[in-house]
Picture 1 (cartoon, one colour):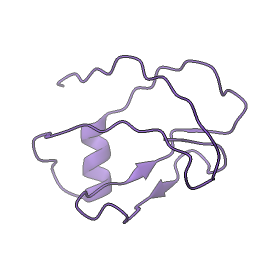
Picture 2 (tube, one colour; picture 1 turned 90 degrees about the vertical axis):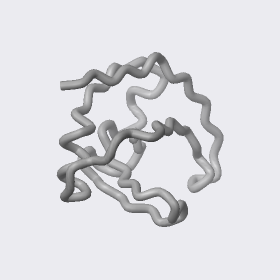
Picture 3 (tube, one colour; picture 1 turned 90 degrees about the horizontal axis):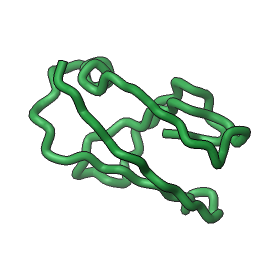
Length: 87
């Protein structure tokens, strides 16, 4: 996630969606570059292995979200193309 205050590398395990096992990982931090486009690259397989200490199951869904309800502010976002490559 991109968080305006939490440092890069911060990991959070929110429990509001108990049906999902998820971890949020801050990969970009701070408000300075808001409004610019960025390309992010992650090895989600290795992220999963590190975060859950097991081999990931087959992918069933991918979620992309933007919200600011926790900060009671407004947000606008545009997502570009998402691509997953087998390695």
